[in-house]
Amino acid sequence: MLKLRSLAVGYRNARGVVLSDIDLSAAPGDFICILGRNGAGKSTLMRTIAGLQASLGGGASLDGDDVASMRPAARARRIAVVLTEQQFNPGLRVDDVIALARQPFTGWQGRLADIDRAAIADAVGITGIEPFLRRFFSDLSDGERQRVMIARSLAQTPHLMVLDEMTAFLDLPSRVEIMALLRSQAREKGRIVLLSSHDLDLSLQLSDSVWLLDGEGGFSVDTPDALSRSGAIGRAFDTDAIRFSPADGRFKIGTSGPA
Amino acid sequence: MSARVSTSVAVLVGALAALALLTLTYGQIALPLAETIGALTGGQSTDLARQIVLDIRLPRVAAAVVAGAALGMAGVLMQTLFRNPVADAWSLGLLAGGQFGVALTVTAAAFAGPAAVSFLTVFEGPSITLAAAAGVAIAAFAMLALGRRVGAITLLVIGLMLGFTSQGLTSVLLHFAARAGGRIYGGWTDASFAGVAPGALPWLSLPILIGTCVAVATAKPLSSLLLGETYARSLGVKVTTLRYAVLAATVLLVAPVVAFCGPVSFVGLIAPHFARALAGTARILPLLPLAALGGALLALAGDAIIHAPWEQHFLHLNAILAIVGAPVVILILIFSPAVRQWR
Image 1 (cartoon, chains in turn red, purple):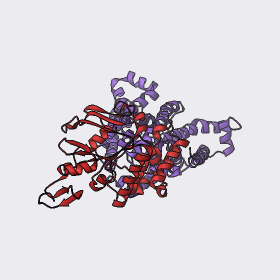
Image 2 (tube, helix red, strand yellow):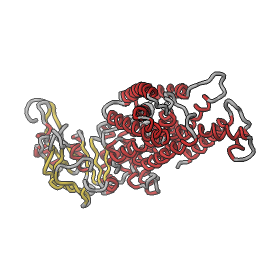
Image 3 (cartoon, chains in turn yellow, cyan):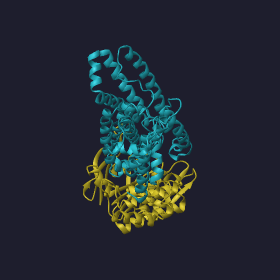
Image 4 (spheres, helix red, strand yellow):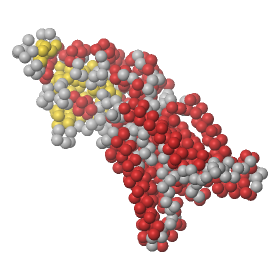
């Protein structure tokens, strides 16, 4: 169970508080999409929930334990992240990348036990990355790399998965496939999956619940259907050039009033 | 350890032992192999052979092996910490910093008077190691701060320039120090393993041994830094603590080398790439023994070449290392994806 109690996120600099008074919860098995325009605070919120950034007030707890005060290694056994950040290093191979997911579970040498190998094999099988296991990470395409990072996060066997813009590099079929895969992972393994995406169509179709950031510090949480119908999606995303049509459940281009 | 890593370690240990034996046997005076072995094992050999092997050649060979291994491991640490495939203690100016630290200390002692000079002479081992460590540490901190701002290539160029600056300053300082009577340090602007006296070997080896232990202890968290800082933190690594630990290990590994052997170029830069190719992985723990052995082999090979019985002495160690090393660096700069990412 993930609980946010009057959480305030942001920075201790000029950018200040981005979002505040967030009271939310998510249950095991939930597949949640966080939507909002650039700068609305999606990444800040997700980084705070994942314990990678200090909150400015309130807190997030996972299964009753405060994320910020968990010991780093204990947190790493429960929370996995996927980011857009990608780094190349000479000699780094795909199997190295995935094996690193088991570091929170291994001894000082990082030697893998049977249970670690099983988790890795499982993640590799689910994501279908066997063919590149011995390739250099830097030689993969952007999409392949992202798939590897998702496999890595699954191999970490987390209770909570936080995926920031992770579908950005993928083509449409891969995006659908990966999002469906994450949804079934949530359902089958009882994981909480928290995912931010610019892919509104897919997010609205696949998620159980949407956390919608309107870009002005406002926040609405509901099922995708309810948010579309209430016009909240439109309020968060509409510009002069593009408007959300609640009737069709998608965006339409044009400058003349709601379609 | 995977079979691939253990096999590589075994082969490299064999090669290193063979090369060491060769270096102990051949030189200006060539000894029969049996006499070298006899001198080493306390068996049958002449006094002259014992003197040549044990007093002259063995300290040099030991220094080359220990220093080469230290530079190789420091290269693995630095390339990961700096996310830079051309980083090492020499290329990022750490050796130059250490050299400058020693020069400054010697000069200060020279101006402080004969008492200071004799103190420095008596406690030569610890004092010049400490002076070098201070210089190395300052250079390392400065480069790490810079490394967060500039790309890999810029950092390399800055490191090399820092090297030139410090070498210039060192030579100017020693000019005045020599006039003031400071004669402690022979002004190594070139690297050499031949100047390491048998009594200095413990001072060379002890910090390197401690540095090796720290490096091994940080190997696991450092591996996760290969994915980037945020991923490392998400894997439970305290990145700031890790940085300090890795820097401490680097200083311990590098300072004694620069104090006793001078600025040994290229060894620490190439050895990690050699180790990765052999290990088939970028995980740090299996790379450390391979980079240590590779660095030791390269350093000893360079030393063996310059001490071969040439008609006209002297070949310089860094000249040999540059002939091997510089082309490798050029290839890395052209082909490494990690370098390409920075462009």
